[in-house]
Image (cartoon, rainbow, N blue to C red):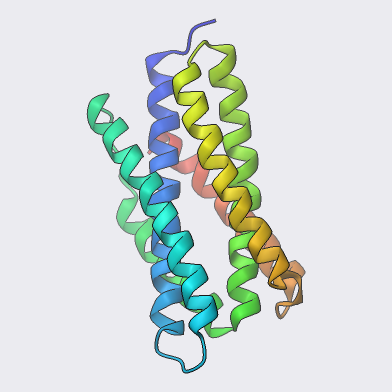
Length: 177
């Protein structure tokens, strides 16, 4: 079974949008924590995760360019929404910032997993392997957030569910728009 050009474009567009949003979230969180005394530990963690997300974004930039695929038209929206989510969760504290990472990465782990399965079945092994590597890094981010007490964030069940729902909605929209 072969992957249609349209489906490949949808995958690249949504993955690019997701990494774009992730970079914006970390920028928002860093904008808060870098201005607070005694936050060196979380600032270091966020910078490391942001650098990995930037690497993913750079890879998708290249793939979009190479395949003449347009990015989502909603990039400005995802940039603003991601930054606002980052700032908002950081203002709620370190645990909430980690809850944000945990929620986002839970959705992205599933999303990349579904894509890897689809791509492998379509014989797109090179792209599948790249996404599997990105998925591993996203799982590491989720695991770090969990170990740092994400579940202890204020209103964790509500916060986590809202972020996961927002991510799923953004995925569906970004595939098409």
